[in-house]
Every structure is written in structure tokens, then in C-alpha cells.
Image 1 (spheres, helix red, strand yellow):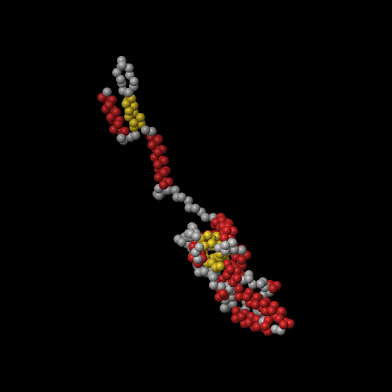
Image 2 (cartoon, one colour):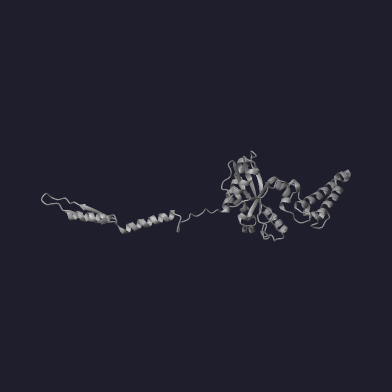
Length: 326
């Protein structure tokens, strides 16, 4: 008996070094026979230990930060999907707030923010319309809004001109102006169309691309000549028609944005001094990019008419002497 206990003690000491389980099994015995003891030693499964070890290792790998750590995939932004959602929101904003007059519209422009000679877009290009419902002033809300909707605006530009997809979003800067000012001073749609698509220079008796000084002089001379107040009643109707024709031609030349030397002026100079709503440039990068609109602000964008984008892109390319690639 003592020898059995000594063996059990030895195995118990060994169990501290290896995963063994030692027990003494006492069988049921009759009164006629002395009890005997059976030493039973069970060793833990080595394979089970490896299995647990490997599972622990996997859990450490998945949650740790060392070599082999699985890095969670960053969410990818599909600009096309974002723009479609924004265009739907644009319609909802008008449906909910247009009756109260709470919706204000703006035109958003983009340009390349570096001044390299190889810049694809070195002048402002109108690409999007923005609907804003805000409890705070637009001059405060819109810069924050553009930091949220810059992906959608960049997609508007890319859809309007495929060549602009080659410009990374972090190389673009933005500006905005009220839609009313854009349509009045930039597009000039409030003015009647030119009769029979006449060349405005021909109406003023000038060659194509005449300097601004000659345009102004010719307009003043013809306007004074055909002013209705200088004609008798029998000829006042014809004089009034000719006066309007000369005025439309002069306005059309002004809207092309001619500089003092007769070249095509920058986008910001269109409309003359009466147009003063174009904002300062707003630059956006990964550090100041925002994910949510400010509290109390609702906004959405949609693409500007593609014909308008193409028209202004061609104008920008002509100004820089580059070929228009759309």
C-alpha cells in the first residue's frame, strides 16, 4: 500500500510538469476479501493542447498589431452612388421646403488648385447646382457643406467632361455663387436671344475679336444714333428695334468676358462689376474632410446641365490655348 501511495505522489509531482491526471480507483469489495487499489494515470491529449494553442494564436493574430495582423478594409466610396443619392435628396428638399421659400440654390464651380503650366483646368468651371436649407448664414454653412459633398461635386465635373477624371479630388478647389446671379450675369438667359444668330461684332460693324475699346466706341456711336428719343414718331418703331439689336450685340460681347487686351478673360470677371457673388476659393484635403453636415443644415447637389459644362470647358481651354477634350 505504501508503495502505491509513493508512486501516486511521484506522478502527482510529475503532473506539475506535464498535463497528467492521477487517481486511485477503489473498487467495491466483499467482506471476505481485502480491498485492492488500482493506480490509474490519465495523460492529457497532446493534440488537444496544440489545437487550443493554435486557436489562441489565431485569436491573437486577429486582434493584435504585429506581423500577420489582419487589417480591416477601409470603406470604399463610390462617387456615382453618392451623387445619385444626393440628386434624390435634392428633389426631396424642394418637395418639402420650396413652398415656404426655405430652399436657396447655388452654382458650384471647380478648378485645379495648382498653377502648373500642365494644369488641365486652370479656370473656374461651373459643374453643379446646390440646394441649401440652413438655419445659419450661407457664407458660414456652404464652406462646411462643400467639405462634406466634395466627392459628389467632383463626380458632377467628371460626368460633364471625362477628361476631368484625371484630376485627383485633392487637386481641386471650389467656389460658389447664388444661382440667380449665375443665370443673370454669366449665362445671360434673362436677355432676349440674338436675332438670326447674328455675329455681335458684325452688328456693331467690327471685325471678329475687335479690342474692347473699339467695341465700346462702336456701341456708344450706334446707340446714340438709334436711340428712340432722337427720332420722330413715324420712325420711332424702327429706331427702337435697331437700338435693341445693337444693345443685345454689345451685351453678348461683354458676356464672353473679354479682357482689356481683347483676350478671353477669367470666369470670375464675367458679368462685370454688377456680379459680386462668387466666393473665395475653398480648398479641401484629407485633414479637413468632413463626414456629416452641420447641425440645422440640409443640402444636396446635382449635376449642372452637361451642355453648359461643355460650353464653359471649351471656353476655358480656348483661354489657356489648349484643346478642349470632353
